[in-house]
Image (tube, rainbow, N blue to C red):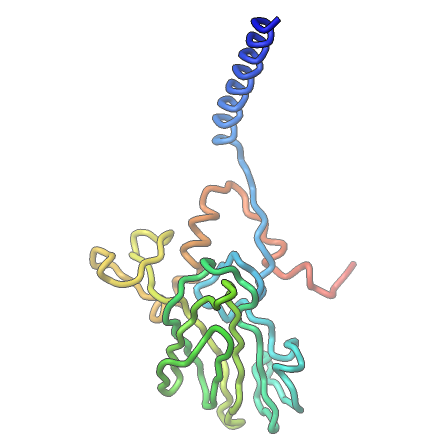
Length: 228
């Protein structure tokens, strides 16, 4: 009986190994697809080099962040604060490791004052440019609030871009690097080349092996009020 039991176990084990090997080999040739996430401040996939693309519009933010009789321009940027403030969650409850700790570049047009809270702090400020330090908190999550405290109605603060630290070697857009020393003369930093380097290299590297990408969520269709 013990011999039969061992034989049955051997057969089951052999079949399992065969199936595992066959399925693994087959899966390598399957046209597997992947959904994209809806781009929001809680999206841990972080698809873009410009993190501000993940933030909710100021007009939709929590009343503790945006309040007052604020007038907006045609693109949704606060044009006149009228004594109030405009704010948004740039990052909200993203697990540590989702993003690199480091110095992020903030670029903007117009005149005004940006304030950073929670896991971000201002390092340096020049006209139209801030350098901020972002690091996961003691709770091992990223939470960053961005506030517009002051804005010149004649040249209002707008077109905010919050850019990842580092850049890429031009020959390899799938790998983020910290500095030019990691490239062979073809370093492109995000702070300068964000118009052409749109996607976070970590995101591209994850998505590159899928045969099909479904952009329904990223396109915002799940929040679109239009129905048929």
